[in-house]
View 1: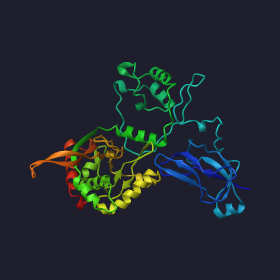
View 2 (view 1 turned 120 degrees about the horizontal axis):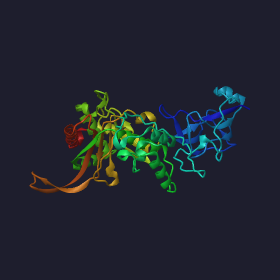
View 3 (view 1 turned 120 degrees about the vertical axis):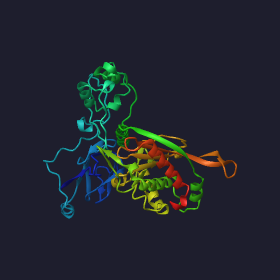
View 4 (view 1 turned 30 degrees about the vertical axis):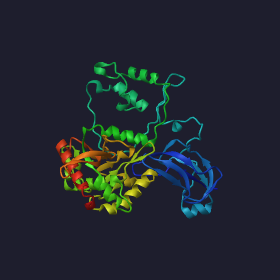
Length: 412
C-alpha cells in the first residue's frame, strides 16, 4: 500500500523550524484527513500539524521536546490507492531523504539545540544552533578595546553557537580586558557541572530580539498619570476596556498627530509610519507575545474592545497567526498587572517606542481648587525610545500629550 509522509509544514513566512510539544497519535492509529496529528511550538505560537489524508499511522519519527526543520519527515501514513487518488498526495519512494531516527538513536539531527559541554572524551560536541526568526533592524556593535573578538575566538564561538552577549560574564585576561579562547574554555569547564535547561524557542526569540534592541541608544522618560477619570469611565463600559487599551488608543492618537516620533532611522533617512499599528505585550509561558491592533488611531475605543480581547486571548493560548504579530510601529505594556510601580521596558528591534503602564497607587495630591490634599489613584507611564530618532524633549512632549488625551477618556 502507498505511504505518505507526515511533514513539518511551513508554519509561517519566517519560520524555519518548530518544536514538538505533543504527539496526538500512535503507531497503528487510524486518522482522518485534516485530523490534528502533532502539536508544535514555534517561537511565536502553538500550532497543529494536520493529516493531509486518511490512513493508518505506520511510523512516528518525531520526538516530543525535539526541534525539526520545515520539510522534515515526522512520520509515515499508510493509505489506500483510492485515498491517494482522491487527495492528490504523492507517496514516498526509495529515493526520498531518510527520515529522522527514532528516539534513542545517535544522530546529529537529534542533537540537543543547547550548548553541550565536555564529553567523556574531553572534547566538545558541535551544537546545532537554533536561529530565532525575529525580524528587525540590527546595528553592528563597535570593535575596540575589550569588545574586540579575535578571529580565533570568533571561530570557537561559532563552533559552540555562542554570541558576544553570551561571554559577557567572563573576565578577560587578554589585552584591554579581551576575552581569549583560554578564558572561554576555563569558564565552560567551571560551569560544566552547573544545572542547566534547554531554552525554549520562545525564550531564544525574546533573547535575540532584546540583544538586537539593545544595540541602539535607548533612553526612558516617565511621568505620573492620574487614573481616576479612566477608572470612572471604565466602570460604565460593557464590555470593559483594559487599562492598556486606553493607553494604546491615546498613544495611537498622539503618534498620528506627530508621526516623526515613531520613525525608523535607516542610514541618513527617517522612515515614517504609513499606518498606526500598535502592539500590546502579553505575558505567556516563558516569554512575551505582541499582537498588533491595526489602525488604532482611526477606531474608537469602544470599537477596539472586542478585537483587543480576542487578540490577547489568542496570544495567551499561543494561537496567534504570524501576520497578527508583524509590522507594528510601537508597543504598549501593562507591567502594573504584576504590582510593579515603575519600569524601563525595551522596544522591539523594529520599533522606536514602547510605552509602559505601572500599577495604580492611592496618593495624596494637592488640589488648588479644593485648597487641600485629595486622594487620587496615580500610576506612572514610562516611555522608552530610540534616542537616535527622538530626543528627550520630544519624548517628554509625546508623554505629556498622551496624559492629556487620557484625561478625557470619553473622547478616545
